[in-house]
Amino acid sequence: MGPLQIKDLLLQAPESQSVTLKGWVRTKRESKNAIFIALNDGSTINNIQAVAQPGQFSPELLLTVTTGSCLKITGRLVESMGAGQNVEVQIEDLHVYGTADVDTYPLQPKKHSLEFLREIAHLRPRTNTFSAILRVRHTLAFAINKYFHDKGFFYLHTPIITASDAEGAGEMFRVTTLDLDKPPRTDEGKINYKEDFFGREANLTVSGQLEGELGAMALSKIYTFGPTFRAENSNTTRHLAEFWMIEPEMAFFELQDNMDLAEDFVKTVITYALENCKDDLNFLQNRLAEEDKNKPQNERSLPLLEKLRFVVDNPFERLTYTEAIEILLQSKPHKEKKFQFPVGWGIDLSSEHERYLVEKHFKKPVILTNYPREIKSFYMKLDDDGKTVRAMDVLFPGIGEIIGGSQREDNYEKLLERVNEVGIDPETIWWYLETRKFGTAPHSGFGLGFERLVLFVTGMTNIRDVIPFPRYPKSAEF
Image 1 (cartoon, rainbow, N blue to C red):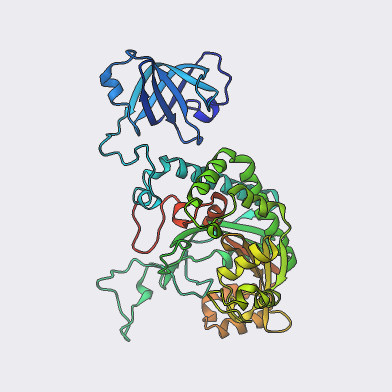
Image 2: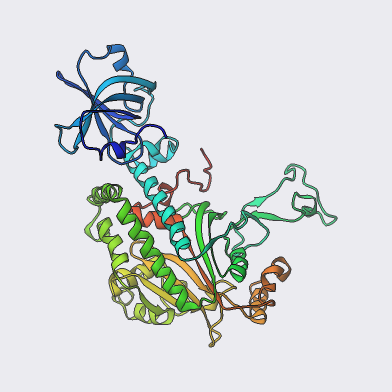
């Protein structure tokens, strides 16, 4: 089972009992009367203080106890005299597992920029900020799996390597075993993928949705939670080339059911984080407040916990895309030409439009429905007017869209027509089309980018800071 973790030791009553703790040194300071070592093992944002007496250990040993070194300490758990902690450890035995040279260890006890920490992603989990983010990330992942399990969903593992492009975006990473210096070619001079490993072109998946729908047409309610990939050359604070997606698909769910599930899902998962990550979220809230001090008042965000409660405590406002456009056209920013992007029926709403609806107009999260067919994917069910589809987007403060979903087109002829309309070869998704031939049923689903959720819950501003090892253009280090 290993030693007790620091988070458990901090909860124990101090009865001078013998304890063993293991972890990494955050700080060491020496006074005339004592040597104080702050130790952290990653189980909590809080350090435990271990105290040695002057002369208790050799100067040579103490010289190796520096920020970043790894220790095993045995001692007595006693009441702490210091502020901010109930207990501390009086050291009886000290063993150094690994040293960290002061001159070369990059994480000395001072403030480091997030840009610098991205360059040392192998060490950044040892900082308070990133250990907090990773614990929150774990808690959210656990809450997601628990939520769907409790609701009777089955976890379906959809393929990472696929020959289909679910979004029709074309920005996919190719998977091949061909010799790229001398690829085999057809008589026409094109690359001959028949000689490749799969005998055809293959890519890393952009979404598990299409295969997820197949599962829903047999198991009724499934969800996928796995890595997805976009070869989009976007160097922004909101894009990653490799990220995780949660995609539930439900047979017999129509648009209304889909909206109800999406709202309940995000509220439940965020509530779980609020209840189980109190220390980490308080730390991240204070961090965000410090960061906001340097910004003009109008650019400052809500306090983190207030923002999370804003989502959990408010019923989501539901309205159609057409109604939203009307509100935007009547809005002050539009009339005063303050919006950067134009407003009009048929546009793909930008983040500034979405945030206006959430933060300024309704002052609550918003679900927009029934978007123009031209700006949405081929698999969305056409409304009776033929102009709009049964899509839904969930919009949050600070980031705009967090969930995108729809009722799926279950009519074979209509789906085939849309497939041809957007230029997809029906042969490449014959299996997807066939589910509309054999026992078709109304069904719906949505997608949530996991990092987008972690970004929202932690209050971070760059998506590269909420995944352990971010992948983006020109960066696949670590």
